[in-house]
Length: 254
Image (cartoon, rainbow, N blue to C red):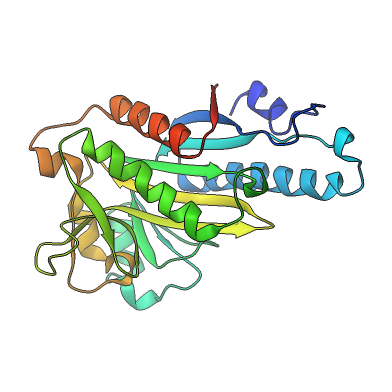
């Protein structure tokens, strides 16, 4: 989040091409959850305000926005979506303090999940008017981004009916295990929040919650499935590649 980032929130750009799919990828590295959330909100608000301002302009005068895809890794934190239940947090505040785990109620969909070291968290902040206005399709493409990334590691992943996210062996109730949680917010077709992909994650943290409010199903990581520590940078590059292809986006790296 340097000065360049501040200047790039929205480019006041005039273009003969009405639709722009330039997506700025910014790797925030290790960052506390609240700082990343505040940064998301800043970009989100900028995109929404740009859209409102464009209503007063002719098509040739409209500002074409920059879309963002933030990647990061958080210290241990539980987040509870607006439709979630506190019953799915299985420990009290004293335990959270003892284990140095933060907790936030946030404005995304979904229930409770964990973010922490060894996990790649992705926050696409897109104005879907420049892509497609279909939240269902948006969620499926986020899932497909992770599914294709896992395929590069020889893992066949898929979807579990009625349960947003990416799973291994979803067709088997006894063996189904979630490797990537997804929860988003959308307003005026602008998105924020995103996915949490377990790479080298300490899965013991998930024992303190009912992940995503889903009883009786396991959570896994890429490290657990492959039996070795995974290069996080390598996974990020694969995610960016598949994201750009699926969303037909031009990637601009900061």
